[in-house]
Length: 481
Image (cartoon, rainbow, N blue to C red; front, side):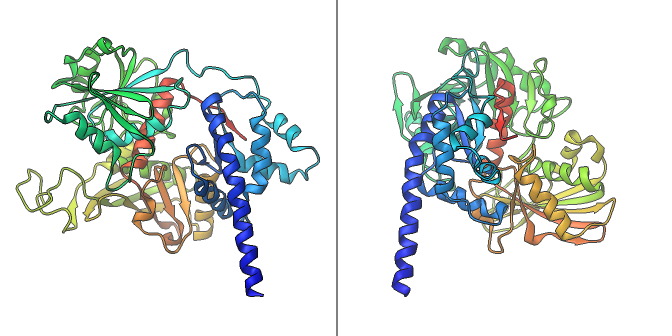
């Protein structure tokens, strides 16, 4: 009997594996030829391996309370691949569940054609011409931004990463920078092929030519010499944070917009993608993507405030150590940060609580904050201790946050887990701004404590790219609505 079960499990797995393998070329063609991003309950299937497709379907059980299999979604994907689709983001999981809910009263081809009628209008360019992107700085965030932008290049009609501006380090600078993009101790190997073009002083990553430009000052580069025009520049050095300093980039030929990957000072708009995108206007040229912590907590705070109201609260972050700390004890201009980062928990300040007010003005003066740098290289944890305007309980609060994470305008920002075993390393590579750890939620009357995990490197980089897409006018319809 046990041997029979073993055969059943193995054959079932092989059947799922076969269907997932057959899905790969269809997902690839939809993306490359039509700029259609296929997802399963928000999990992108683009550039996925067979096992990734199966895992995305397995994730759906947390939402549906039952299994969604590739055998069920395969016919829907096959029907999609027969259409001449315009650019869109199509949730294969939701489409399949909707088809099943109607009782299969029509063929899958007819159903898909009807559901996708608004985008079954033929392949069309997303932009009049691809938007040039320049990275100013090529450190931790710069290289992760490069990975995300390269991954999203698609047919080449959207965003094109054209250059990275750095200070020359050595005679083999190009080789070393290519190697750092290729290998990452936290995020693993680059998914693709990287070569170098010494004549152009460029890194070639999955066919994308990224010119490495050497410069000591923002205004000293003439980008038009390299064929770069109307570019969005992402400054990930954090060196200039006010309008005068950051505005130096606009004096360079070829740059039209600038994003700072740090909190901006003065009147520079601080944007948390998904929350206050309305501040991204054609008239404004300088923007801040705020901080990783601000991006992690603002979507959650907005969501809670919208439903329950926030009287006051305290935000404590357990933040992975960063490059501005010392590996071993040594002089540092800031208090405590001179002590060895891999060996100590270090109490330090965070501006995230004050930064929240720039994005959600109604929370001005209601939050305090502090931070503890901890000896891990990546993934941080924000603890939100809040007093609400009304009483609730764990079930209501978690249920509300779960629904927001699954089907709302903030589903790309807020993720949700109910696993009793997750730890920080499980969230390396998370594309969400933050992940609610539901089993850690505490509620007592009108007080609650929420625990929010976030990949302070990769998740933040994805938020920055969402900003870039908004600025470039890459607003894909999402189906089903």
